[in-house]
Figure 1 (spheres, rainbow, N blue to C red):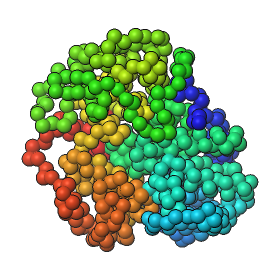
Figure 2 (spheres, helix red, strand yellow):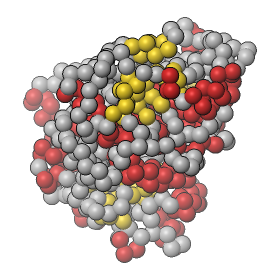
Figure 3 (spheres, rainbow, N blue to C red):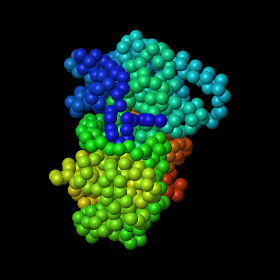
Figure 4 (cartoon, rainbow, N blue to C red):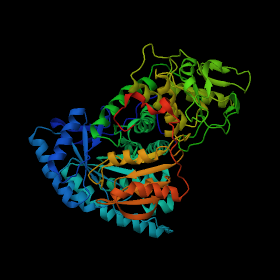
Length: 608
């Protein structure tokens, strides 16, 4: 199956055009040869018309081209009329998208007033109960008929009114029917979306867009690749546009890194027609990150140099780490084989941080680049390697995009039967002038995160971030976001919206202040139940809004405490972690000192 033109020579996937609103009056066209569209979402109560108008205008001022507003009830959906009318009276014609979960009747109401409706196949006509049930083919067909009865009226209404639809599957909210036939897998996400797409096509409706969101960047990448491969198999007229996003990415540098890995990797493959960076921050903060990604990725994946395709070294649809020989990296540190992915630094960084490293510190250089035995090659040409006990990397100074270069290197090593460990660099041409920290963060995350998600890489080297401590911490944060290492608490935190039942930003900050020292523990913070239990399936603990002022606590995807007053919920979460043997008292001294306390990229004040 092919999911892109070439993993070595990037060419943007050309999709059919989907019109959102009136292009003559602020509307947009997604797909075709049109620029990739940037979108975001409001965080306020949909019934607060003035707040919704104000936040929409703020987003437009920031450069947002498509604004999504949640409509959890028919009453909320009806108020979209007031919001849209107020915006239009002010001369703002940005297209509005209604975000629908659970309530088909809310979707029918919203479609009267907005240019696009987002539905989630996992809960549009199903309620998730985590029920285990075997479906016969007849029972499964009957379920599909029931779904068609619920979804076809919306399709017909959108067709009549000239509206568009986003068929947005979320990893955390697949229906029990899909889960029991396909499991919690990328295939399940794709099939869930295709079921709804077939209903739309049956009604001769084609103004729709797909999305495949997950909080795990590797899962998200696999889902989108599989979706596009399946669309290619189904035929040329299945070339619908794709919306990219990593859901529940979190805030600060972690949210930016996760989003850069997932969105950036797919943009570098030529996929994507519209994007959103979902941050647990004020919505306008999302827009410049989108803009920076769109500006940076072409330089990483679309230069003029041609390469010979030699066949991939990895399966793009299923993650599996490349097999390599184990070697000694430095005294007491092994690399390759079954070892974790290691962090290598230039001598200049080592000289500046070595005196601050203490024996118990988790963030530390594990090798000095200039002291390694490294075979540096041009992967476009044949090369020989003298022994297996040495790194292989791409030679500096090549006119070759980094992602292409390292994919080609891994492919050539496979062809000649060598399993040398690979050292990944975030750049093969060190910038003459230091990059701005926010751009260095995104660039390193896209390059290194994309390759790690392909299973390529046994050690990483960052050289675009000029700050010594910042570059070291960035390396570890990328490894954590890519699921390669765990050196700190991991958080899955959704962005706020009108469904959110508490202040996500302040609560996330409080939870982090109590738990950020819990190495290896994963905590999910969800404003409502829409994606909560599913996205928490691989989290250890969850904090979920159950009702206004009330919190439910989860262990994995199972709710264990209900309706806890919000003022008590953080401490009860701590108690729950303690009950399950995963609590540790915070060290009196800051064991990470300057290496981890200073935010990367100047993200001070953004909960980083």
